[in-house]
Image (cartoon, rainbow, N blue to C red):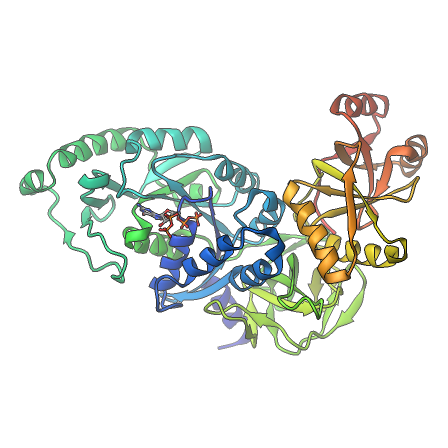
Length: 530
Ligand code: G4P
């Protein structure tokens, strides 16, 4: 096979996705079952055990342990049928939602898990908005059908309203809770009969192929007739599934099941392989990059401190955008123009970090480094490309940060610089004044930063209230106008980690007044590249 046709076939068999859900909907359980079905793990319980460990360390002073755990499980690669599947974990806690948003820029599809008793919940809604904004195709799994849950038609209606996209049921439940009989496959016109139990591999349940047999009515009781009635309505009302509409993010195929019972999971995995798209083109400032281009390119979408705080190295998670990555390759960082040759690069096969030999578009590679790589960096074989679309959100909470011991000011700055580069927090240097400010989207981020400053940089930081409440990055088409604006507002201007000028104000109405006075200045709540 020539290089190019190999590249083409490797890209075509990649599927890179994330699971989005509200805490407790069943993401961990489903992840584990997907790994189990693909043979990536042998024993049920290992992912859950890790989650339990994560929960057990609810004391935030145990953060190092936590980070270790989440590094290992943040990317999971598995093979299923003839596909290579990359499953990216999204941090569950809403205070880390910024990180989650960035992870979602690295996937080509999302699997939304809904707790059938709760319907669409806040965290799902937020994540969904990010997917919708990017037109990421979404598959929907309605979980926990073995419980007393919402009526499936009502749920479908709710999803349609909330998602603003057409819902196309691929399976339909017969009953729920104690009466849960199984799910019908609407395309194959078959039904899988529900059998509880966590230990089966799944897919070995009884399969009914003669749905018209009147005997089913007595076997499944009222649930049978009800499901038939619902299906009639669904057939009349539901939009017919069109693959192109799904790819455009206008339709979502919906599946019902019970992850804990391995039920309905294989159908989702099959759908992922059959329906979800292989890696597509990605936009850079300079041009659009196709995954089948020969030259390697990739973008850093996440940086995580390594498990060993003594070494202070970090892993940059790079989504391969194009080409063929090989061990020992020399890479150029567009932001600095510098070359570097990472001596170790890791993959995340079967949840173990392994030395990586090669990777293709859609894969995630981990590059340990000491600060060479920043969030949002583009890596290439030499072409000066800068990928866009990695979101940095204007923080919603601010604190002043000072050191208890003034002799440690340098360490504080160094520590904050690194934590800022990692995306753990946003750091602002005021243009007038010397007290650094921290910006976050969640309170927890301040605690994490204080803890890490102390344990990794030996700095006891005083994190104190700050008068600002709103931040906006500012730009202008006319450089002079921007200069004038900055000069007039220097008492509330700051520079962020990449020296982007930012205005900080105390109240939202104040911002509106400033915007009215300065019509030629653009105010951004979102920054999209390094
Ligand atoms: P998360 O990662 O989205 O937070 O959810 P997770 O998988 O941890 O599942 C949350 C809870 O829901 C767990 O119960 C899990 O066992 C349960 N669960 C997941 N799928 C199903 C299902 O299909 N049916 C039912 N009935 N329950 C399901 P827990 O009590 O919090 O934990 P555990 O004691 O089971 O470990």
